[in-house]
Image 1 (tube, rainbow, N blue to C red):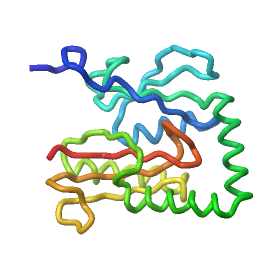
Image 2 (image 1 turned 30 degrees about the vertical axis):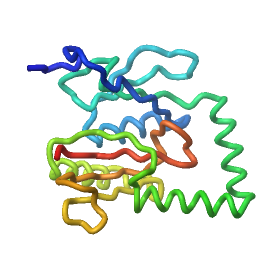
Image 3 (image 1 turned 45 degrees about the vertical axis):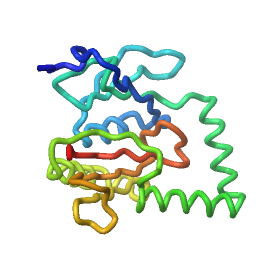
Length: 189
């Protein structure tokens, strides 16, 4: 029986690269720890300011290359683009409206919105994570954070016996901070 991801011999998703804003490293760590993940420092700095952090969904298997996502500070090149987009979203009413419609969909109807997912053992574990996030981060992040849980029997739930939590936030992203990032919390069917 496989107990460590390194023992798996088939193909698998290796990692996702995520970013945080300058000054938000500790907040990013707090967020992923509230998700139940373990954070380790890779010691690798690359071209960035801080070392890369490895986020392990399974605290008992801290393989730094597999079943992991990385967090590092946004690079200046992307920061310049993010700032231009932010200014444009303030200056262009049409763009601002489109952006708000996208954010609304991400918060309320997340199916089909780009995301990555973490697996949990039970629907109760997903609810516990949601409670932990709400208790520790809701006040700090206010409108920057939204959690929506879909359970079997809900009118707009996915097919099957899945409990799915969708955390929409802009602290840890694998794309644009302006668009935010969904992280799905999913149970086994």
